[in-house]
Structures are given as C-alpha cells and as structure tokens.
Image (cartoon, rainbow, N blue to C red; front, side):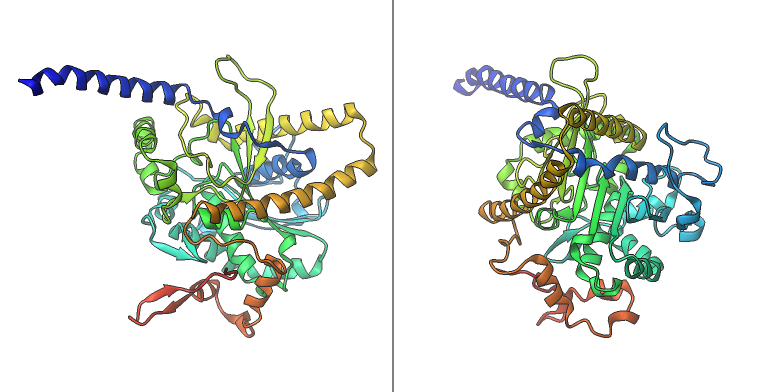
Amino acid sequence: MSIICGLPILECVYCLACTRWACKRCLHNASRDSESWAHATPEEFDPIPRLCRYILAVYEKDLTQPTMQPPQSYNIDPKCLITKKNYKDTRGKVPPYLLYLDHTHSDIVLAIRGLNLAKESDYAVLLDNKLGKMKFDGGYVHNGLLRAAECILDAECDSLKEMVEKYPSYTLTFTGHSLGSGVAALMTIVVVRNRDRLGNIERRRIRCYAIAPARCMSLNLAVRYADVINSVVLQDDFLPRTATPLEDIFKSLFCLPCLLCLRCMRDTCISEERMLKDSRRLYAPGRLYHIVERKPFRCGRFPPEVRTAVPVDGRFEHIVLSCNATSDHAILWIEKEAQKALELMQEKDNTLKIPAKQKMERQKTLVKEHEEEHTAALRRAVTLAVPHAFPPPQYGTFDEKDNEGDSSGKGKGKESWGVLIDRLFEKGDSGHMVLKKPLVSD
C-alpha cells in the first residue's frame, strides 16, 4: 500500500526532471557555446571566404564557363589550375577535388567537396568505420576518411612536392567541406607526420581549414594539431555537434531530426567528465572559429561576428534544437556569412584607421597569442585527464620533435602513403598490431 501511495510522488519527480531537460535543451542557444571566446581578427579569418569559394568551384564541370558562381566569383585562373578530379577520375574512392596554385595569395590549395547524396561511393567512405576502429598517432580517427586522405596523397604527392619546392615561400593549404573537411584534416596530420615526403616542408607552412567539419578524430589529436588545423562552424550547424558516428547520421538521413533529438536526449544525460575520458569519442578538429549571427530570444539575423578558441572542454558538445541546424551546414550559406563577417571586420579596422605598421605588429602578437593558447590547451587536456594527452615539450617545439621522428625515414620516397600510415603501428607480444608511442611524450 505504501508503495502505491509513493507512485504519484515518483511521477511528479519524473515530470519535473523531463520539464527541466526540455527547458535546458530548448533554451540552449548556439551563441552561448562560444560566449567566452575571443573575437577573431580580419587577418586570421581572411582566407576562409576565399577557400569556401574554391570548394564551390569543385562543383563546376568547367571553370572556364562557370554556371553557379557566387557574387564574389571564384577568382580562379584556369591557367594555374594544376588538376581537377571528378568521381570518374577518383573511381569513387574519394570525393572530387581540385589542386590550385594561388599566386595572388602565395598559396598551394587542395580543396575537397562535401558529400554527394546521389553517390553511393561517398556513403562507402562514410560507412568504412566503426567507433574506435582506427587507432592513429596516439588517438582514434575515422577509418574511411583516413583511407580517402591516403588515396589523394598517393595521387598528388609528386605535384605537391614539386610546387612546395618550386615556391618555398608559399603555404600549403588543405581545405574541405563536410565529408571533405574530415579528409582534409586527416590528410594534414599525415603530411605533418611525413613532411620529408614533400621536400621537408616546414610545419608552419602547412595549414588546414575544415569547413562545417565532421567529427573525425579523438580529443587529444584535435587539440594537439590545433596549430595547423582550423575548423569553421556556422551558428547551429549539427555536424560538428553530434557525436553520432557519421555512418549513422547518413543512414538516418531521411529522419535526421528524430535522430538529432534522440542524440540530444542521450548526450544531456552523459556528464562532460565521462565524455572527456572516452578515448574513442571523436571531435571537430583543431582551432575552432564560430560564426554567430543569431541571438537568444531575438528574431532574424544580426551582423555576423566570429569567435575563436582552442577549447578542450565545452567543445560543441550539445546539439542545438533549431530549424537552422541543417541549413547552417550548407557551403553556400557559410561562404555568404563568412564573407559578410570578414567585410564587417575590415570595415571596423578602416573606421579605426589602424596604421599599417600597427597591423603588422598585431599580426605578430596574434601568432604569439595563438601559440600560448595552444600550449595552454595542451596542458588543460592533461589536467582534465584526456586519454593519451601529453603536455607540450619543455624544450624545443613540435616542429623539432617531428623532425626527430622523420630522421629515420630515409628511403621512404618510394613507399605509398598507406605504408607510411601503417608505420605508426607495430607488432606486440601477442602478434597483433598495436599503436606506437606518439612523437612527443611526457
């Protein structure tokens, strides 16, 4: 009898808990995810709209006669287009991409398009993975995206090496959208680990911009490579926020809102401490740039602002229940808002009439601040007991440590990138392949 009398109390507690969860989730706004981050400067954000347009250019059949050019135009000189591959050229192993020599910005750019819903081969890349299937460089990565990165590097290694050596002052930039962003990010890590294959290119010349990034690597790798990898997220974009494996997202594409709500409920019940200690949980890579254009309890769009940080905890861990969660993932919309945000930043600088000398000094200061922020993030990852995280080296830099790791790589020039990736593993006492120790240790 006493148990029956207690049922109404349990029902009330349950209803209150559900109400609290609903209020917490429904009132959560994307702008709060980055409210404590610093504002980006026009100098560091400048390449992003341009790279978005290069990704859009991959969708064109003929760049000499573009059919869906954005208002800013692609600004691509066909004479400087090294290669442009479609699905037939890649045999469906990787999404289409282009390699472009940008003399105007002293940049060598490899841009990869996003998922094509009509191509089974893109789904094959996504489905080639299980949570925690692929160990790599002291962490976990998405297996299908890593193998796609390997295919592109095998095809374009000679061209990249030739241009890197011919133009020693140019940067090497990998960029991609959605599916392509994961391929670009993992390609960057592989290149950083094997820089001798590209003429011993300095680490500071390599960079990656992942647009609307897929969660493709574990937290320790996402933080460790934040000095070379940058992720760009527009407001409520769902993909960088859900830890649902990519293959499950696109299996449930036609019921995506239902899947997002279920994941939202599940993630709300998991403590952040437990998330951080899950070594197989994948994250958006590198330094994060968050474009914010909508504010809580206000209608319409506001002038976009860009915030940036290298967070360890609070790294887009909760899905935003928003009608814009999928539209904010579109490359067309990201390019438009990124260009608008850049113009607003430049307009503010022009209004303040900042002298050129002071801008140069600000750029040097910015580089130093980013290095310090990266170092602080590495230390915080150790403090929070993130699996396989280690502090920054006390002496030297990651660049020097990488050189130490590469010094034994003589004679690797004829090996495929797949072999080089597999070199990160060795046979254990049981005869199975186990992960080697990362380059930098405690």
